[in-house]
Image 1 (cartoon, rainbow, N blue to C red):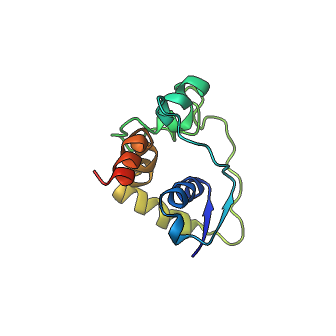
Image 2 (image 1 turned 120 degrees about the vertical axis):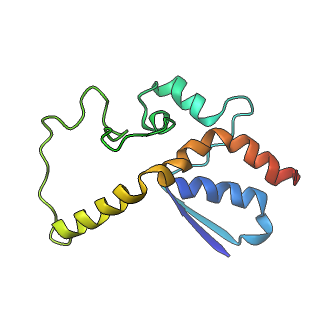
Amino acid sequence: MILVGHDWGASIAWYFCQLRPDKVKALVNMSVAYRPRHPKVKPVDGMRALFGDDFYICRFQLTLGSRDHLPPCIPKEIGFRGIPVPPLPSWLSEDDINYFASKFNYKGFTGPLNYYRALNLEDNLIFVVETGN
């Protein structure tokens, strides 16, 4: 198989190739270079040490119980105050926005954010896959 990874999928593709080289003929990764695991520092702990608690991945670790929270990519103290909303591109309608918003209102952001929350489990997950335990 030829495996293509992008963004966080690139990280998964790197590990897949390490764990199952017999399955991959070629790998193409875009936007994320290979970064080996640190044997003693969990990924989120390392990011927190480098970038601080307000780094988006660190903020994604919080359980979001309220739907009126600020998106984790905007600093808490700034929020959306005073940020102009750009016009929608021609290929995206207000109905599209309302449809997507309704889906997030129904299910929330828990599913998409769980990928980031699982980063600190990464060492344990890879251990389980490598050893079969």
